[in-house]
Length: 296
Image 1: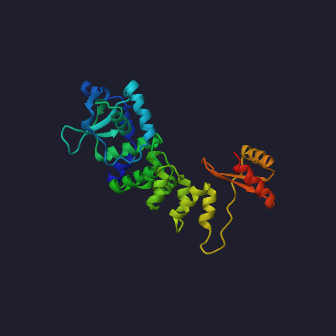
Image 2 (image 1 turned 180 degrees about the vertical axis):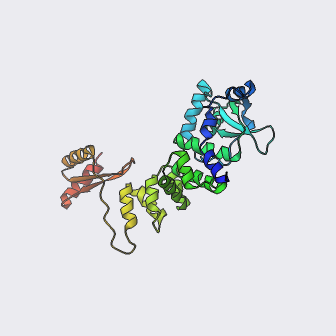
Image 3 (image 1 turned 45 degrees about the vertical axis):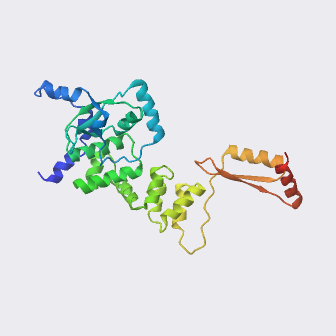
């Protein structure tokens, strides 16, 4: 059988091996069974992260919450590790880096692990599959994970789609995000813009500039697509305004009645900022507004 055929079968088997869903057969020894079921306590300084781990961004608040839980209840699920490929006597994380990081914050000195022997390919596959199935990767990390599998082990988009339960267009769309400038990728990683915004920017001649406009104006994905399609040098397309909710309209009415002037509120979606416009008809109204704003 060809190497490609072997890889296609192997890709995606990681979680079954990782979680020990399949019990050892009756022909296997009790020592092997114990290896799959028993935890080992290891000094935390003997455990190292996997340099090829696709997940790069760890939210500080989430880690702090997990550290507080570990202080109170300990580590409920052990880490999965393998012997370190270059440091004898040390171990490399296969799954559970977030728990390892939180344990450092909690100042835990010994943590429970399950020791397994995995190849480099197994480790990368397991890390990607585990994170994707648990929705732990941001879109850029997920795309980078797909790229690693393709570059390091020769997996095709079709093979990854079948093994991961994703469609081929899904994987292709995520891989396209890696063509964006690092500035835009960082905005996606930090949740400042969505993967939908980022995909709309792929065909733009100035993705970084438009990304700044998206954040400043709180544009939706549809509005971003409209902005990207606007040819350079032509009259700018008027972007559709986001419909105002009932509470905003009610507040506009209350303020207009109190000031006896028209008040307009522009609130940015998914943001806590915005602006208020007050329209006056003559200088007397302007004088009244100034006196109202400056009186003690």
